[in-house]
Every structure is written in structure tokens, then in C-alpha cells.
Image (cartoon, rainbow, N blue to C red; front, side, top):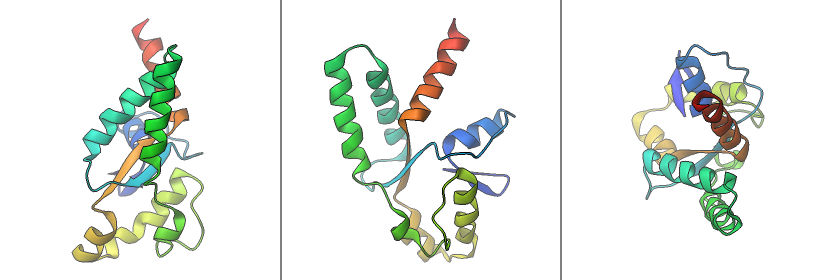
Length: 139
């Protein structure tokens, strides 16, 4: 997740805004997990490798990647973990950004307690959109 123009957005929406592309905020593009033993760049690299394997034609490789992806998502945070952020469960990136606006009011210790180990993992839909885009631009 990134802050762009004082809004907290998922990595895909944030990248789209930075590239001056429209952001529809119609759906979430991934998951937020609690991972104290992995950095965001490690999670991103792992997610990229999982995505390539899932979209490959090799069924054995795909099955292993799906298993690793499921293990990664066992650490997914749920709405109940962060109900103090918003009264209703966010359904879109825009609602998540509004819900996370309370971050600015937290003191440094509260912020660290709740957010220091959070990492973003793209969803299967995000994987396919990213790779479709890459295929179009490389052909």
C-alpha cells in the first residue's frame, strides 16, 4: 500500500496514479498480510514468481505456486483486526483509503503496533491484469 495525494491506495492503484492513468477504485486488487519475517520487496518478488508460475502452462509448477500462495494468505488480516479504522467493512480501494485515513491521528507507537508488519500481496485478478499488460507492451 502506498500514500499518493494523501490517499492510501493499493500498489496497483498507486502505480496507475503515478503513471497518470485513471483509477476506478472498483475493487480491491490484493490482500494485506501480517508478515514480520518478510519485507515488502520480498513479498513482491515472491508474488511475481507465484504469478508467473500460476499463469504458466506447467501444471506441476502451477500447483506448487498455488500452495505457496495459499500459505502466504494464511497471514491475511481481516476486517475484525482493524475495526477501529472504519465502521463498515471496506469493499473497494476507495473505501479502504477512507478507512485508513485514521492513520494520521495515531501516535508513532500505535502506528508501529498495528502497521509495521503489514505487506501487500496481489490477487489472482491483479496477476492476470499485470501480465496481460506486459504481453501487449512487449509484442
